[in-house]
Length: 336
Image (cartoon, rainbow, N blue to C red; front, top):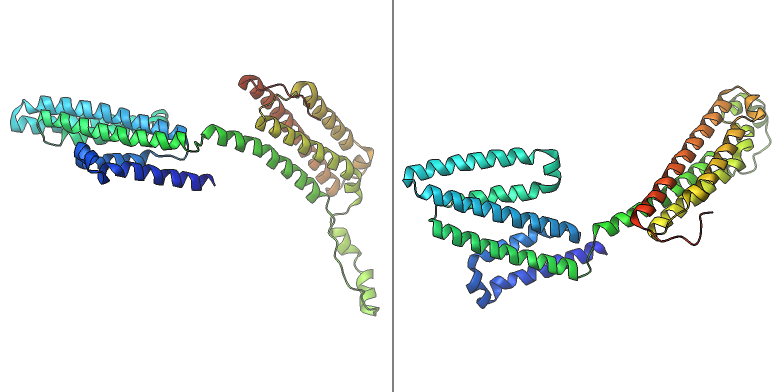
């Protein structure tokens, strides 16, 4: 639905800016420069309102700086005669083009301001190399800047006033939903580890061959994972998985509802109690009394489960710190 809304908003913005062409009074004011307003809609309008504002401001700053320097270079070069004009323009285009391109390769600049630097290069070259006189260069820059401003205004109007979508809301939703996904993952792992494969078979006929297959099935049966040792840890580990899943869901709910969680008071002691239970389970005499591949695998499973408990404890502390930093409201219902 958000994608549909965004598409409709872009369509509305394009219709509004097309009025600069379709209505004669407006076309007489801006002329062919109305195309710059349409281009602004196409390249600036982003899915989130904040991204649209950021990109529009970068385009405006790049256009203003590039146009101003282009006008200055054009004005200075116009005083040097025909040959001097060409040489000066070439030198300035090379210097600014090389320096700005190098700046665009710097990671911190490329990540945040790459679009603004690109518009600066484009505008500077269009204005400086246009070959017009100084007064016409200033007029050209003014007209293009005004039409870009119109396109940006239309973008802001449709993006903010018509069902605005903010990246912070999407980040909020995605962050809280990840806790539920992790909870489901923990529960599914518990279920898969302790699941027993059962096959529904029809009643076999009594025959000598069937009896022989039963008598000789001991070696093949022993090669499969046996269940007695798993049964020892099955119920405690399933309880741990349910507790971890509940804790993760409560943490995600606290972020979604913007309520503080009492991690240090309630959640962390519960998780430490779970970890002690797992340590006691791994040191069980029944597990230590059998030194085979299965017991090693179960010990490894319990160790991984304890690592998961540690990670959930770290997440709980981070969520509590996030609530303090963001000023979440106190949660009346504490974590269970």
